[in-house]
Image (tube, rainbow, N blue to C red; front, side, top):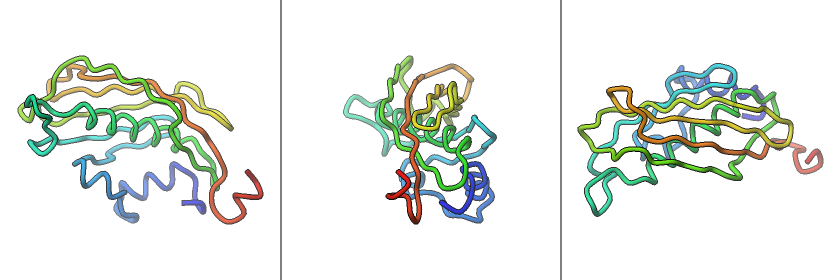
Length: 151
């Protein structure tokens, strides 16, 4: 990752030249699109994501949104820079079930930054209705060899 831009890294993951992070397999999420400042994830929830009341756990939606916000910011970063979430605010709009169909999560950078960046995201169901939204802020920092000295 430190040897390429954030967008190059994401596009190589989409193209299969780099493996996806393990959490995407666990959560049944796939990064499908990446352009500068915008990404799209698709998630196919199943019963393993249900909470005790029989709906998809909000943590899945939060994880999906957090991943998308982070990757949207990553798509704007130059070589040698990384990020981590410092704040996320999620609004749950509708319950999600397995019959809700695949979820589509689109995240867009609202303000890129050299130290802190901001992004918004929305999750829609198979019919295009929003089920959750989020705003987040992400810390931007150097990664790779020599990062400790640079940061």
